[in-house]
Amino acid sequence: MKPSKIAYKPVGLALGALSGIAAGALFKQAWKLLGHDQDAPDATDEERGWGEVLIAAVLQGAIFAGVKASVDRAGAATTRRLTGTWPA
Image (cartoon, rainbow, N blue to C red):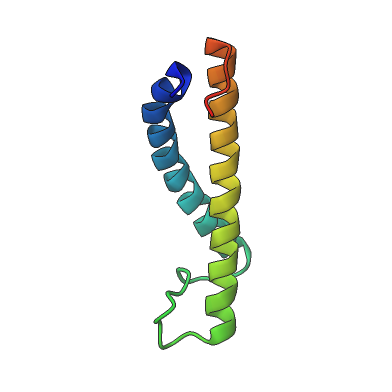
């Protein structure tokens, strides 16, 4: 295993945790911007309809995936700038 990959592991874990927090906050704001006064529904929320539950799940998944990819890519690019090698 490359030394840069080993060195990147703890950085990647920390960035992953931070990206999860950021994505959660971004999703809450996006849900409110869509005109919803309440929190996003859970899949088992009996009071909410199928459409609302599925739209919330798809939006949340897209935001989480986009934030994670952005943070992972930025972390890898920064690692390459600092070490000269890509951490893959």
